Figure 1 (cartoon, chains in turn yellow, blue):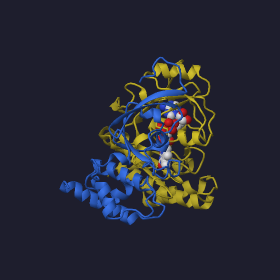
Figure 2 (tube, helix red, strand yellow):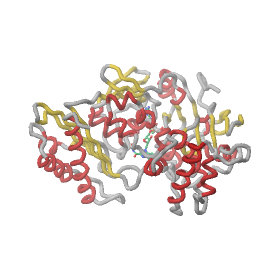
Figure 3 (cartoon, chains in turn purple, cyan):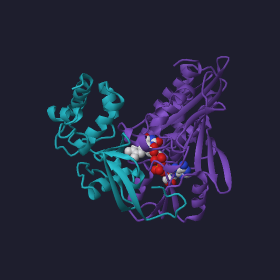
Length: 287
Length: 167
Ligand SMILES: Cc1cc2nc3c(=O)[nH]c(=O)nc-3n(C[C@H](O)[C@H](O)[C@H](O)COP(=O)(O)OP(=O)(O)OC[C@H]3O[C@@H](n4cnc5c(N)ncnc54)[C@H](O)[C@@H]3O)c2cc1C
């Protein structure tokens, strides 16, 4: 690893100040994505700002119908949080399957969101749930909306002098339900294909549907055709199957060592059917 | 040590409690926790394997939580407690997890063993009665390249029994 300077400030204001003053400064949160990158000398970094010393940053609360996740809340804490389990169960389920236990003991939701790894789980969930992403800089506080925050490989709307200080997930309860599925080549590895589905029912029909795919493309992607198939219809097995096939066939996966285009499209069909089915069941009030 | 209201530094003083003893070193900021315990404290039980945060051979406890020490900076352990495999025994008496790995031969070449023993210790602290599936899931971050998993899982089951019997 190349040499760099390090500082561990205690307040958000100090972090903002440092981000505006220091050249090539990076935030380090859990370090689970950043340190492997530094080891490859793949980042041009001269100063590391460690946010783990921030006061009152390690929180998970429920306020204003939203689950608020602070900048140093670890995946393991989010996974085990009763607050999260009670108000946004899917977030707890997703967090409990990020990497392995060692990764979850360090990695943060806010860090994953800022990092925008194409295979990362939190960005997909943020796009699906239209999560609020709060960022701070010396210019003040901004709130981004999760559904249009991500722009492909490690690209987001975050400005260079901004950092993520909170992510807010909406409460999910019937008649809205969410399903989330991913396929990993081995337990703990980054997923190869991921899909999230959100369904709202009204008088037995689907009034709102969202489907977001991830890992196969450079960033979270809405499956518009499948969404059109679902909205306004009754959630029958045939309809769900038709929508799931559409997700796979209209997806545009990257062909790489993890799988061919055809393989990933087939995976997408299977995963989508499971995710939409789970979303419908939980929208109906089922488990 | 607090760095508040200071300039970013390329060398820092760190105070880390390792296996119950206070350590204090001046280190470059880029020093990994794995380098700190091995090259600064000569605790070479922590093995460096893949160096890419995948294999888990370098797992240590940081304030009681299993972490891959190749993926944490030593400065991030400042003011915290670190337990390496050398810190598990009680004055020469092996811990239940260590003894179970010994008795069940929960290893083949042994290179990954310190990491497995540490992760298993943390697993049993949080869940003293894990099912086989929970053990497998809990050990997903540790790789045994000899693929000696069966004996490793038996060792953890045996350790759980010893702990629950208070042995
Ligand atoms: C073996 C392994 C398996 C993994 N598997 C998965 C998986 O299955 N799914 C998954 O989603 N992730 C996976 N991860 C990644 C993990 O979730 C990371 O925790 C996450 O991507 C980054 O969070 P972090 O807190 O560790 O960020 P860091 O590594 O500290 O930072 C990552 C990047 O984000 C920036 N950053 C961090 N925090 C902030 C902030 N608050 N504001 C602005 N910028 C910030 C940093 O400057 C850096 O560029 C895996 C990692 C490993 C090592």
